[in-house]
Amino acid sequence: MPNLKKWEEIFKEKTKKNNFRDYLKHIVSWQPLNFYNNQWKISIFPESDRRKKLVSSQEFWDRVDTNIKAWIDYDFDINFFDNFQTLQDKIAFPALRAFGERENCDYADTITGWKNIYLSMTAVLDVENVFYSFSVKAWSRNVFNSNIVWDGSENIYMSSCIINGFNIFYSKYLHNCANVWFSSNLIWCKECILCDWLENQSYCINNEQFDKEEYFKKKQEILNQKEKFLGWYENLTISGNNIGSKNTNGNFVIQSENIDKWYFVYQVNWGSNIMSVWWDGKNTNIHNCFGAVNGEDFYNCFGVWATSNLYSCIQTGLGWTNMYYSTYCMNCSFCVGCIGLTNKEYYIFNKKYSKEEWYKLADKILSQMDKDDILWEFFPGKLNPYYFNDTAAYLIDDSFSKKEVSEEWYLWREEEIKVDIPEWAGLISASVGTKAGESIEDYQWFDSNGNWEIDKEILKKTIEDKDWNYYRVIQMEYDFLMKHGLPIPEIHWIDRIKLGFRF
Image: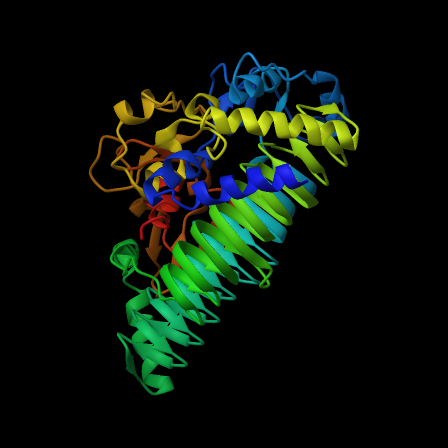
C-alpha cells in the first residue's frame, strides 16, 4: 500500500495542473452525442477498428464473466496503453451502454432505472419519458430536447440546467421553479415569462410583476407567438448563476464549495475541471471529471458513480474503490487496466492475482508508467472510439481543428451521417418556401376558436431542416406538443441538444 499511495500522490498533483482545454480534449471527448448504424445495431460507436465486436447491452452483461477469459499478462516491452489496446481488442463491447432494469429504451445510451427513453444519453435513477435529451436524472419525467435536468423535474421542454422544475419551457438555469417560459437564472419562482435573475417572484413578465389576472392575459398573448419561441430560447443569457456556493467559479454551480472551472455541478466540495457532477453532498476531491455521482477522490474520470479512489476510469460504478485505468467494471475493487468485470477484486488486465501478487505487479506497472511520463494521462486519442467532432468536447469548444486532434489520433467525421427515410414518410420542410414543397406550417395552426392544432399526419412525415438534416415527430412527442400548446420543432434533435451546451 505505501508504494501505491506514492503513485497516487504523483497522479493527483499532475492531474490538478491540467488546463480546461486539455480536459475537454482528453476526457469530455469520451461523451458522444450521436448514434450510428454499426454492425447491424444502433450504437454510440461509429464504424472503426477501435470497437471490433459489438453486442447488445443485455448480451454484454449476461456474458460479462467471459471477459475474464480474455485476460492478458502485462508485457513490459510495450507501454501501458498498448497493453490496454491488446485487451480491448479481445472484448465485445455493448453497442449502447445500459445498466439495470429498463423498458422501451432501445435507442438510448448510459441509462439505468428508466422507462421510455428515446435518442437520449445519460438518463439514470428512475426517469421516464425522456426524448432527445442529455443528463436527465433522479425521478424526472416528461423531458424533451433538454440538457441537465435533475431532481424530480417534470414536464421540461427545450431547456437546460433545471433542478426540481415543473412545467419549464425554453428556459435555462432554474432551481425550484414552476410554470416558467423563456427565462433564465430564477430561484423559487413560478409563473414567470421572459425573465432573468429573479428570486422568490411570481406573475412576472420581463422582470415586471403583474396582478394575476393581467399576467395570464399577457401570458396568453405571448404564447400565441409560437414562431418566436426558438429565437427567444436562443437569445437567453449563456451564463448561469452559482447558487448557495462558496469560493467558486464556473457556470451553474449549486450548493458547492472550493470549485475551480466547474460547470453544471450540484453539491460538490473541492475540485477543478468538472462537468455534470451531482447529488446529495457526497462528492469530494474531484478533478478532471465528466459525469460523476456520489464519490470522492476521482481523478481523470468519465461517467463514474457511487465509489471512491478512482484514477483514469471510464463508465465504472457501484460500491468499489481503488480502480486504475479500468472501464465497464461494476462492484469491483483494486483493479488495474480491467475491462468488463463484475464483483471482482485484485485483477490486473482481467487476470486474478493474490493480494500480495497484485500489489507487487501494480507497483511495477505504475512505476513504468511514471518513467514513461504517462502515469497521470487519460486514455490517449488512439483508444478513443468516437468521432471527436460528434462529442461534447467539440460542442463546448469548436475551435478544435481536424488537424489538431488527428495528430493525436482522434477520429474525425468527414461524411454526412446516413439517415434511412421510410418510403412512406413524405418529405416536408421545417421552413416555408424550400424545395421540399410543404412545410411544418402546413401542419400546425390556430383553429377558429383560437385553439392550437397540429395535424396528426405530421407523424407520417420526415422533416428537413435548414441544414438538410432529417428528423421525425413520434407519437409521445406529438401528445406532449398538443398538451402544452407547443410548435413542431424546426431544427434537428442533435441541434436541440447542442443549444444546451452553450455557456
